[in-house]
Length: 306
Image (cartoon, rainbow, N blue to C red; front, side, top):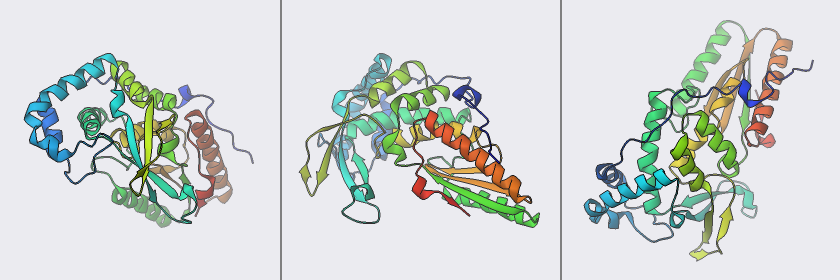
C-alpha cells in the first residue's frame, strides 16, 4: 500500500518561535570570560594569533573587541579577515586513498572564536529559555548527550516489549550534514527559531565569502571559496545545525524520534506488521520531502531497519 505524505510545503510543519532574539549589551567582561575559558593549547588560525598571547593583554583588548562585536552586529557585517579557515583532513575509516573518508576540521582564528563564543552564548541562553529546540535533539545541548538519548530509547523499547508489541527501528544518517548545508535554508530555519533582524543579517554575512586553505604536513594549498556548509570547528556550526533540523520532528507522526546531531533514530511499535510497514513508509516519505525542502541529503548507504 502506498503511504502518502502528510504535508505539501514548509508552512504545514514549521512552528515559528513567537519571540525574537535581541542581543543584550555586550561588554568587556563578556569577552574576558570567554578568553579566560579558552584553551592555550589550541592551534592558532591563519593569522597566527595564539590564545596565550590574548590572555596576557585581555584587560586591554576586551573593551575594544566588545565594541567591535556590537558594531559588526548593528551593521550586519562579519569581518572578512576572520572568514578564512585552515582545513586539516581527519581520517575516519576505510581506504586512505578515498578523499570522502576524511572529515574536514576547520581551524579558525582566535579572534573569530571570541566573536562566536560571545554571541552564541547569548543565543544558546535564548533557545533554552524559550524551549525553542525540540527535546528530541540530544546533540550539542546542555544536560543532553548520547547517554540521555540511549536511556530514553531503551525505556521506550522496554515498554513496547512489556506490552508484547513488535518494535521496528529506522536509522537515518544525513550525508556530510555540516559540509552541505544550504545557507538560505539555514538562515530561514534560524529566523523560524527567533534569530531575526540584524542578528540574522550578521550571520548571513558570516556565511558569505568564506575561504579555506587546506594544510597537510605543514604545506598549504591555494585559497578556495566555500559556498555551502558551516565550519566544522566553529562554535556556530553545531547550534546552527540543531536549528536547521529542528522542524524534522514535526513531519514524523507515527513514531518516537531520537536525534543526535545528524544521526536520526525513528522508533516504531505495534502488533500489526502491515500497519507498522505503512507507518514507516509514510514517515520516510515525509523525511524525504523534508530533506528536499531543507537542502539536506539523506545518506542512502547508511539507512538501517532493525
